[in-house]
Image: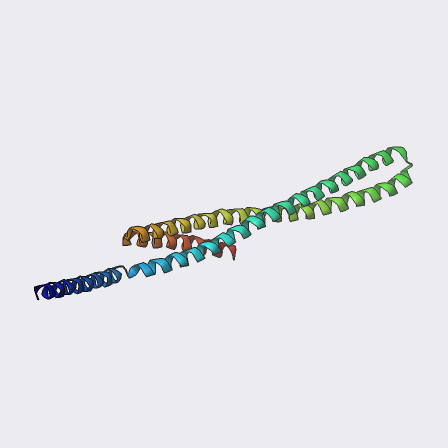
Length: 193
C-alpha cells in the first residue's frame, strides 16, 4: 500500500509540476506578447523601406536619362555651331570674291542662315540647361531618399535585435529611427511634387 501511496504522491507531484510549467509558459507568453507588435513593426518598416528604394531607383533613372538627353542637346548645339561657323566662313569668302550686287544678295542669305542657327542654338541651349536642372534636382532627391533607405535599414536591424534580446528600448529606438526615415521620405515627396 505504501507503494501505491508513493506512486500517487509522485503522480500528484508530476501534475503539480505540469501545472506550474504550464502557468510559467502562459506567464512568459503574457510577458512577451509585445513581441507580436515588434514583428508587425518590422514588416511595416520593410514596406516603407521598399517604397523608398523604389523612389531611389526612379530618381537615379531620371537623373541618368536627363544627363543623356542634355548631352544629346549639347551635341546638337555643337553641330549647329559648326554649321553656323561654316556659313560665316563662306560669307567672308563670297564677300571678297563676288561683285557687289551678287555679294550683297548672298551676304543677306548667309546672314539669315547665321541668324537662324543662332536662334536654334539658343533654343537648344535652353533645353539642355532645363534637362541639366532636372538631372541636378533628381540627383539631390535621390541622395536624400538614400538617407531614408539607410535609416529604414537601421530601424529594421534595431527591431530585429530587439526580438532576439527581448529588450523593449531597442524597439522604441527602432521606431524612432523609422519615424525619422519617414520624415525624410515626406520631405523628398514634398520637394518632388
